[in-house]
Amino acid sequence: MLDSIPTPDGADRPLILFANDDGIDARGLHALVAAFDGMGDLVVVAPFEEQSAVGHSITIRDPMRVHTWPFEGASGPVWARAVTGTPADCVKIACQRLLPRHPDLVMSGINHGPNTAVNVIYSGTVSAATEACILGIPSIAVSHAEWRPTDFTAAGHAARRLGERVLADGLPDGILLNVNVPGGAPEDIAGTRITRQARARWNEAFEERRDPTDRPYYWLGGEFVDLDEGTDTDLQAIRDGYVSVTPLQIDLTAHQHLSRFADWV
Image (tube, rainbow, N blue to C red; front, side):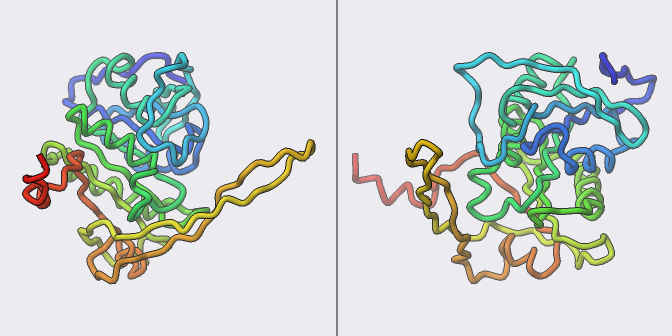
């Protein structure tokens, strides 16, 4: 366990921050950090417990606590902190309070399950990367397209390759990358595609159940529905065995429709 962030010895090494939404002990996070071994000074600031599907929520009504956490990397202990907050909280407090400077790159993941199509809106994994983007830090969200992945090797390889490219070339202002990796070994990956978000939705249902005192409660379930027939989507890339790389932007304005509303005011 490291109590202080290692100081680079001579070499100009990048500072890389890792976060996620599955919690600091998640196997995907450990695999992601291991994949970046030797690339720079690696630090982890992740949720104390699972925060899946919290979106970009932040903590404003409760105190946040930060715990020193044991975290083993591929070459030994990694500086790590567990935060009693959301993924966006983790990036905020890391960059504004815990780290000596802003990181050169923020990596979020590897998420246990895909973050494609409409799921991007709900994803804590994507939101950690989005928060970094808001702060002007290049960032990548990485997800494994299987809900219960057992082998993160291919996702780790894809994440490292893209991380190296972003550290070398940067990203445009206001842009982050959302990466989804299909299941299988690295040699099974067909390649990489630059994609767009597919149009999709959840057909949701709230099942009513009863607790031991006969009071009703509700459990959310549903079916994911792909509404997009395009061949250039994140969903289709995963189906075809490709790594999907989708550039996302913070600006949600529908610029192409602004003129339609000009006579409304």
